[in-house]
Image 1: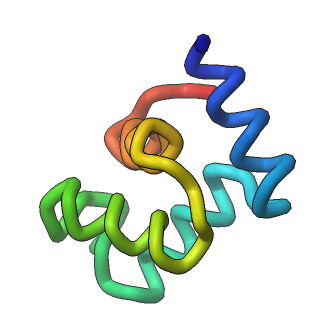
Image 2 (image 1 turned 180 degrees about the vertical axis):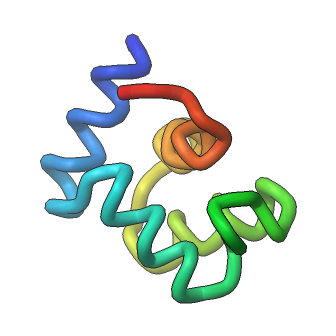
Length: 70
């Protein structure tokens, strides 16, 4: 599956874009001034628990936090 397919599937499942997730992550303190403030595991666990996405999809969102483009 391509990176873009992961992003498209996440948007279809949750209704949220990577930018939406970034805002939520900032509110939770996972990102500070646009920089990661926690390890990947904390972010992927949050995404899996709160939004029901799989590990690969959670890692795709994490990758966007690190600067990967859609």
